[in-house]
Amino acid sequence: MREITDKEEQFVSTLLKHSNSDVVIPRMVLSMKDGNMGSISFDITGEQSRAKQLVAGWFTDSDGTHVDFELTIDKQGSLYELDIWKVDFSPLTSLPNEDEIKITAPNNA
Image 1 (cartoon, rainbow, N blue to C red):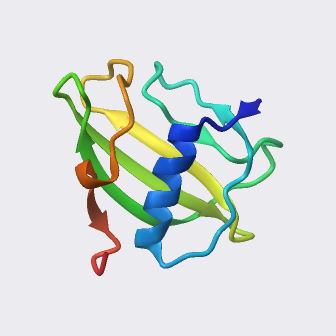
Image 2 (cartoon, one colour; image 1 turned 135 degrees about the vertical axis):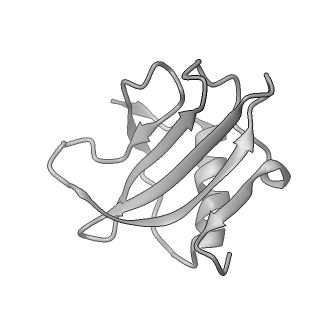
């Protein structure tokens, strides 16, 4: 368990703007075992489960690699995971700025 970084918090906050959701961003997160692609879990107790997607999309990492992401909530409506998948499975170089994010879901975003 660790404190969320400023860049992670900024990225999640940007995503929440596109979700029409007023979910609180927790201060503590867990780094997920994903080969350092950048995924984090907000379920620090390991007792929740994914309920639904809030927002999804993609960006290009600073090394030129396509990166997909999905922000989800649990059954209580709290943030569950920020799942990041870099298509070549390499470690994430950096999180994007707001103008570099392409939202694909929800469709009205």
